[in-house]
Image 1 (cartoon, rainbow, N blue to C red):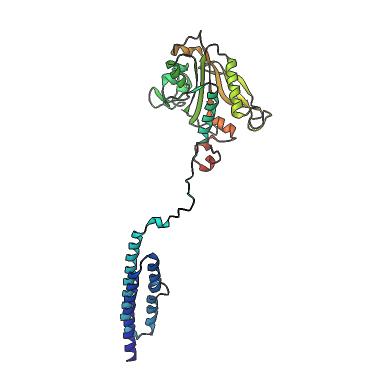
Image 2: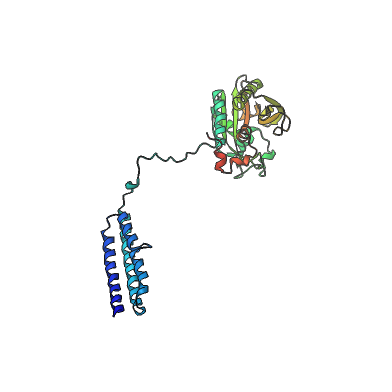
Length: 345
């Protein structure tokens, strides 16, 4: 009789706990009070858990019924808690969690790529010397890229193994010199322009890339001489590399200039004394230049008896490598943010 009475009391206690737990959950007015009710009844040391442990004292024959009652109690209480929790979450105002006194969080800002920085710096130097900045198409015709610039029909750069053709007479421009012809066609002299932009050639190693950035310069006016060209490039070198920069001109050949020259600058690493960077010569090649070949003027109706001019071509990638002491042109195009962050604009 004692065990039977004890078993009945235990079942009554389960029922009382069920009503108490459901009432406590329904009476919760916010997420905090709901969590307190959950811990009291469903927590690791809650009343439902204590009932489960209490079944050990019951008569073995009564334990199955008591177990079912405790499991039902847990299931109903869990379901009630989950439903109320979802309801509170739907009602929450996100503004309650906004502390307007905290300082704002700014998103990190990007900056111009080192190549773009270098190109802009070079253009600004020539702009201060009176040059205008002009741009043109990256897909060019054979005429503007080669023929009008005095490249003979059998020149190796016309071969598909050297240039990147996209059609029989269309190619990705190999230089921005073609914009010079386009400008002179539309503009009577005097013409003073620099032409920045991307160019493309089948060339890929530590110091060359199939796509690279170039700035071509052109000046056509009356009485322009090689001395003017050297003066402009000397001033450019001083502005770009520093006041003590020195240049020298070496004879060379380009189809669109005559005479032509390669321009070297005193090594930016050793100051001209000789080192590994300049191969102990004290000089670094930076660009090509020359006086505009009179053969070009026939394509733009300029009178070579009245005008003369000079032209030069600067590889922006190479200038950036020299100024910032970089050893691999591929670093510009690998998309490594750690490299880019070293050169904030």
